Image: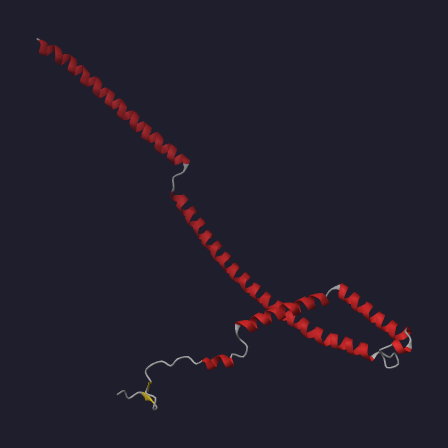
Length: 196
């Protein structure tokens, strides 16, 4: 019987425990589905912020406000829904509500753009480091090639060497022709002596 037992159930303390499924309860929305929904909401907020930053939005908002003011000023009393005497309270509330939602959406879009810029800057920095390392490597290789080329003979040296070799070959050729001529003379005189 093992000393390392758990309670009355006889579980072994030396064996690893199985992972509990209770951990999923406390993920606080950090799973893939919530990140996808955050991405969708982020794109939606960026679209709204991008739309609010256009001249067409300002023109449409201005036309909406002018129509609202004209309608609630000129229309018959029973058709008006916002009183000019109260300072167009409904229009003020609508514009305040629009501004209160526009500011956080714009900030959210700006934060997402900052995150993208930060990632892009990091990628640019890494790319620049790689380019610098490649450039330094190529510079070292060029220097090594220049040093190796200094050790190689140039055209004038090769011409001088070839002239020297040609002169040696001509000297050997002359020496061999004189030896053959001297050997041929000895052979001619020796041949008639043998005949006698």
